[in-house]
Length: 129
Image 1 (cartoon, rainbow, N blue to C red):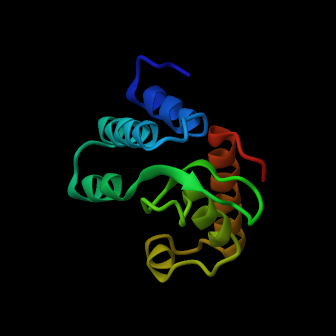
Image 2 (cartoon, one colour; image 1 turned 135 degrees about the horizontal axis):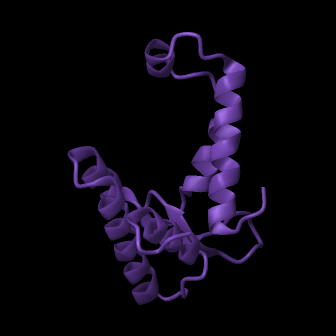
C-alpha cells in the first residue's frame, strides 16, 4: 500500500479504525480522519460529503456478551456497522436501478460482487467472516 497516494491513506485509516482507543475523544478523532481520507480520495461531491457525514468510528457490539469494539458505522451510536450492511446485502435481490444500468447482470454476479466486497472490507478491518 502506497501511503503517498490518497487511496493508500484511506486504506490505512480503514485498517486503523479497529485499533482505535475506546474513549470518545479517540473515536471522534478516528471519525474525522476517516472522513477526511474519504473526501481526499473521492473528492468533495455532494454525494461524498453526505456519505462522509454519516460515517463514524464508534463502539459496536457485534453479539450480546461480546465486548463492543471500534468499528466503522453509519450511526454515531454504533448500532449499524458498514460490515453488517455489506454482509446482509449478500443474497439480496439485485437492486432494480443496478439491473437497469447493467443489463445482463445476473443474481450470481451480484452475489459474487457482494461477497468480494464483504471479504475485502473484512480484510481491511481485520475482521473474520
